[in-house]
Amino acid sequence: MVKVDRYRVLARFARLFPDPVVFEDQEHLVERYLIQSGLPPEKALYLYQNQDELSPVDDSGKPSLASGTASFRFQGKNIIAEFMPNASLVLEYYDFGTGLSPEDHSRLWKKQRIGEMAFQIRDFAHETRTLNVTNVSELYEIMKKQSQTTSLSSIELAKMPEDVFRVTVAYLKSQLGKSAGQDVLEVEVYAAKDLSASEKSSLEKRLTRESTGSTVYVILSKPSQLMKIETR
Image (cartoon, rainbow, N blue to C red):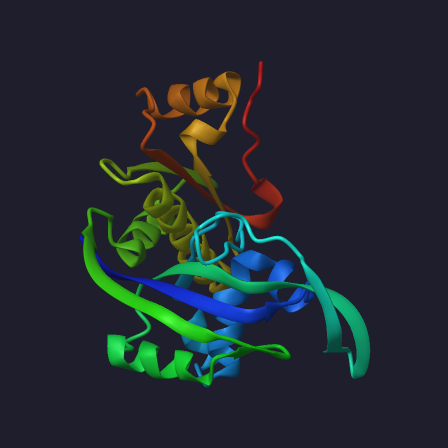
């Protein structure tokens, strides 16, 4: 069992410009902002943002539209650019073990500036969830001790909402990858529902059990022995 803290931040921009800081590499926006606000980079490894695309909305909840132009500072120069007025972004992310309290997270958001754009926090919500997830360190040690050149295991992430499932898979991939890298090993993590029928069949035969929509496969191997999923 793993306890994880979920945060939801509603950030409202008086003028939201098409700044790459916001609209490129969106899945790491929260991580970049919090590091710039003082979060130690080594703690950012435990943060996982909801992977849905960020879509600005207006005060009525409808998609925001550009409706004006103004001077905007970009890469050290002032340019004229379109902006979306009174546009809000909903940022959801999960803390899998930074050791920060909700109060610490709240303080980090008080900077209220992304790139050259100021915003206001209109809502900051927190909840703690308990996930039925295997201990990552124990799983890694078990797989590493297996005598095979390539070790294969599966995890069931049952009864999880899709957004939680996705960030948990990202968490497993990151944490297992960190451990494997220290031992000069390679790790691959796949959600069974993302694989083709032939790929799933290949892994099911190796483990002699069928997968479900909650199954996650973990493959640990030496760099020269990466397992290829059969597709025939």
